[in-house]
Length: 300
Image (cartoon, rainbow, N blue to C red):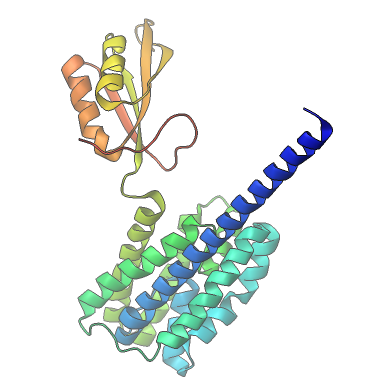
């Protein structure tokens, strides 16, 4: 291959990489936009009209809105400004840009939706569906590399300095917010707010991890080959054989390791039970799987 051909190949590869990068940026921007609008819908058409709060900076903004009457979007944007700079310096430019974009859209959308009539005046329905819609929006933004609340950024930074998890910091922060909300809005509203927050929190997990989450399985059996072959044949999943040693007996053991989807877990258990009822089986959740030949597939 001559020099001109090499240059053309390099140029072609660079152009392809730029196209992929542009596509990735637009995809991220679209889902951050969608997530911010969904969160605004959850807040303005379910929670705020029924005086129900969210946690974090948004929760503080809802309390201040009820105390002052100033539009919610103004407080959401102003209170998050310090965290834009913290996120940029401590976490990274891409995260900070995605967060600024998401919170700006959230602020504008809450202002626009403020005049829209509430979908329901039933407190329980507003709590449940507000939490679901809000959580789905936040989950989308987190999944695509951003955040919609400065308290999340603060918790990430504090986690680096103190021996507490991000979740523990956020929980502590929200305890004070809901307590304050109890004094301002009433304790029944504060209790509905806690319920909405729990629903939103679980919805965020579902959106980030997906319904069809992956599971890792560890199997110890004397019939390791038979079980491994059955998993390959009946589930179509690859297996890895590891060498182990019994801590009590000192005997050599073969350990089968494989990854399946949540929908395949029951079938895996039945295969192991059928092949060796005395086999040791441990199954654990996995947040993410990359590389190899693992792909999600339907169960028939």
